[in-house]
Image (cartoon, rainbow, N blue to C red; front, side, top):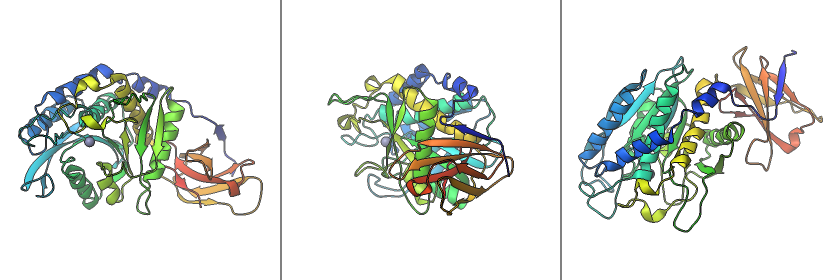
Length: 384
Ligand SMILES: [Zn+2]
């Protein structure tokens, strides 16, 4: 089969993506973070958590096309939880053409370990009003356009007591058969420097786990590639770990249910402010938070328009200087074939393939490289 093949070293950003990126507003992000930090506490065990959740739900309700649910679930008694408690979290949805889902979220709840959980001040500006504001901003920007996938925007709660809200949603998704393609968890993404004088406002870390039961590492690698090829002066720093040592995040319960999920987090955390009354908006960097929001937008845009992934992705094992990859998938769909050195953590090149399910990479030897194929914009499947 001869097909028109378009070889691209770097995919240029489509103009409507550029248009959407231009709509991400640091002033609006700041206003959301400041409002959330103005609640005395958003501790899951406090009465004001529900107030904050209702405020956030109302903000989502103002966006045309968005459906909002205040999801109820029960946190069992345990660590940081004296007795079982029914609480809420915010699940907002922009229905797409298909029932496949791309989810972005942050945790709405906050924590101050130095005071009483119910009554003590816990502003939680960076941890994690930043991720909550990011998801709301994406909903505002993305709701103006039609998407293939259903987009979900979540303000998780119960995070600080043990990822309870994310676990409740992940288990519900599994039991109700939700087709979640990707989960982008944003937790502590709004500051670019720490007290030690380290600063990096050009990168955000993406943590990913590797497992037989999900493809999160490949999701992370795709995000790195998409941001590298669609954003100027901003990059993903991949970390091939589930999370930081001794710490956790809302992506992990999704991993445990077999979904692809990664965590975005700033490069230089200031540990001394986390979980204290000092986690305040004044220590945040709004243009940095806007850039992390844009990196998420690049990923959501791509995943939100992607076709079904290919199956049976194979390397032709016959000897030769070139490498031929074959796969199966929907006819007429566009695909991307990726390659990298066996020692490279990131994709080094990609070819867009239109309306064909076979592609030959000229003079790229199969013995020295790793290959994968994805639907255009979707998570690649490794070739074997
Ligand atoms: Zn957090």
